[in-house]
Each structure stands twice: as structure tokens, then as C-alpha cells.
Length: 152
Image 1 (cartoon, one colour):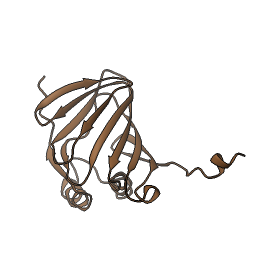
Image 2 (image 1 turned 30 degrees about the vertical axis):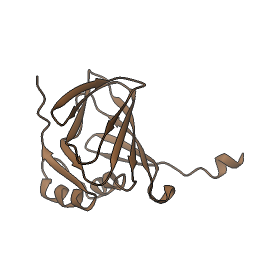
Image 3 (image 1 turned 90 degrees about the vertical axis):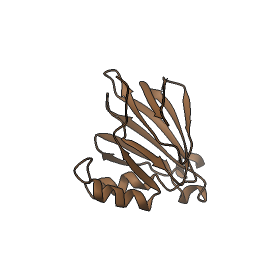
Image 4 (image 1 turned 180 degrees about the horizontal axis):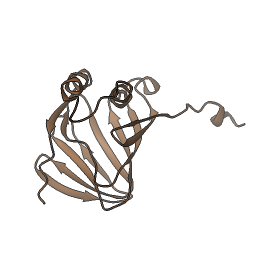
């Protein structure tokens, strides 16, 4: 075994609300600077409209077609493209088509990546547990704003 493989940290994977999240770098791993996770998002799905108050976010599409709603503007991204989602700006996304989307999310500073593990461990679901999710989100600087107002 080479030195790189023996020092590799294992991925931490959880499934929450049908999406699989595999955290590859945590705040602890990066002296607080970054959090990185890979997601497999079901076709037609994505998060509700929300705001990150603590971190900027870059989402890099690996597979699938994504549509983003960012502060009232929609844009699409496909494999190999990235989008910047600044802190304090309402946003959401959905996977278009009939195939699972796969993306890499990079957060700076790190820390938010722990939200998904906590939500999954507590078996919280949208919309059933919105009060508990809002409370948990608040601990991570996350504010839920409701459904994304897509223009169909």
C-alpha cells in the first residue's frame, strides 16, 4: 500500500430525503476552511428554497442536468460545469430529466456538511418535521424559505 492510500480518510455517507450525501472533507479536515460532499439526487428532486448565512457554496455538476433558481433568476448547468451560490442569497435547484443527478458541493468555510448527517440520524423529513428542521438548520446558519417558485 502506498503512503497516499494509507493516509486516506474514509468517506462518510448518509441518505436523507432520497439523496445520498458522501462527505469527503470536513471542517475538521481543513482547519475550518472547507467542507466538500458528493450528492446523488433523484430525478426531479432538489432542496427547497433556502439561504446559507455562514458559507459560500460552489456546486459542480458531474452527471445530469440541473436547473438552479438563484434570487429570482433561473439557469441550467450540465456535466462539467459549476455554479457559485453566495452566502445570503436565496437559492434552490432541481435535477431535470429522468436520471439521477450527481454533483460535488464545496463550502467555505466548512461545517455545513454536518447538517445532512444530523437530519438523517434524527429521521427528519420535509414537510413533516419543518419545525425541527428549521431549528437544526438554524444551528448551521441555514434558513428554509419554502418551495422554489419555479416558472413552469
